[in-house]
Length: 482
Image (cartoon, rainbow, N blue to C red; front, side, top):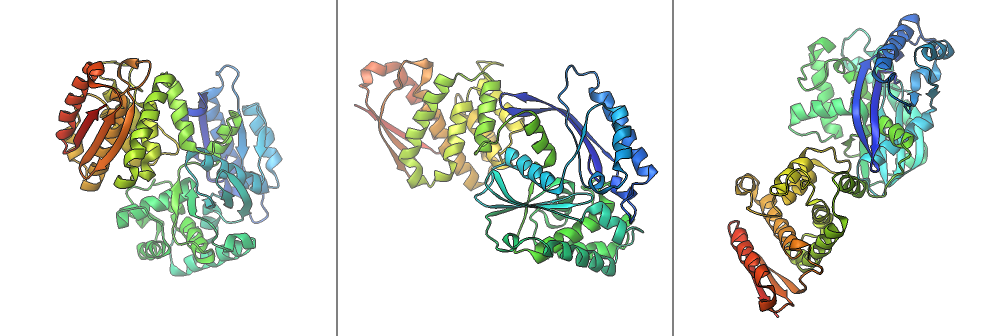
């Protein structure tokens, strides 16, 4: 129950991950109803209660629901919040938890830690409707939590209420935000972090605006200043020309932009990335009792392996073989950063087998490419799908040809490794065919196997077919036997 929007999420715990069943939001703008004395007016209370009445229809019939209702800044500061809370209990008979600013910041960081891979040291900003949370963390654990009294709804009301966008209104908003950021403790000014992230709707909308004007969503101070000048030239919120930004979010963009510019000006930040997780994800994972993994991607892979009933014993054998092959060529091919991707492909290569054993590589690739996979960036997820889709039978030459040279080169080498790892464990044989050595060449690899050729005649035929398949993409596979 935020200062700008109320969000409803219905989810289930599935093998250690959260699976979203339904979600929706309503623009309530509760913070718009706060007067100078922090009293919430009747119109805002009515909007909030009306939203809860509609949300109730979504889950009131669920058997034994686990419900957590969390309210943030506006109900935190509203002097008459008890009137709202009592009326809300009459609609939805569950306690409403009005979280402190520090608890809100902790939940935001927890939500991000559950949904993506974090660096050693991280700085997070979340611009809400009434407050802005700034968090420092070490990997999955928050170390410094701060909640500032500046938000896109409250600042819109103070500095852009009439909808007019001027340099003066921006300067006033920036000056007010500067004072808030200046109040942060000294830890925030050391620049001792590896990754800066921004979460929630305001940062997402700004990233979408930058994408439209610059062709990518990289957030830097010069770009934010250019976007500010563009908004000043538009003059009014009704003139904002941002096709890919939600029209309900656009009026709050100048206020949110001023806060983010101040963040860049006051703290030693050079660039920022958008984080998909935030407070809602933090609440959900805690409600489900799921602990934070040190590696979000591994949790995702483990969850999917359970969901699609992966044969763990076979997957582990393929993984170990793939790693043996990988270790033989990784240095020469400069592949070290892709080690985990190959491991994940080996574990999940049979994801689609419950749909069709004959074409499970194609079904598996579709599942991986189109699943929600916390911790995986789009490029890594698509590469993983590409490896699984090409781990057996004919290579998908048409799609490989669509890749740029660097991506194609990388994909072919990793595909060759996963195909050989699967081939060396074909038929669920009791023990893998043992590898004597693996040597990288400029356009392929040399494989030496311990078994005498006459004992594995069927495998030799498979290897010959594989040699021809890989030759279609310019990969030279050479092999010899003991």
